[in-house]
Length: 140
Image (tube, rainbow, N blue to C red; front, side, top):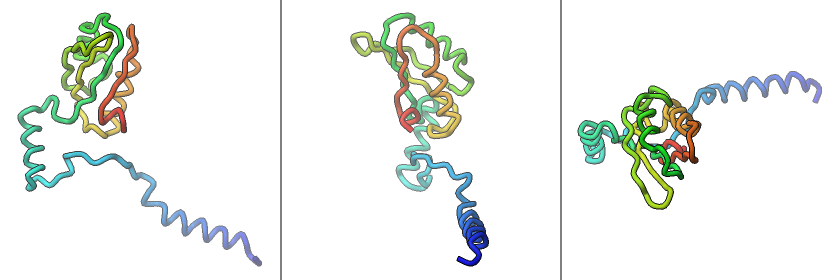
């Protein structure tokens, strides 16, 4: 208690030196790319990547609640209007009622910050009807 500033400073320095390695940590979920290539699951992942490259990474799906001009929206996205980080966009499929769905193949890893930004861009598209993006990237 005689030198509280000295003890506070030493505690601050020691705790910040212990916390320094965690300044740039990024937590994401695990996906199939972390599997060893020698395992059977890793081999299967590699096959899917090579044979079905466009939609091999658990693509996010986007749904809209209006039967309006779904094809124009798909063309806009294939053209790259929401951002250049998409490999492919499937055509909208009617799910029933007023719900339509399309898959989007992202150019980035599903859990990367760039993929999450693409999902945010898709959700912010100005179109008639509500757009909801679902899938692994959107849920993370």
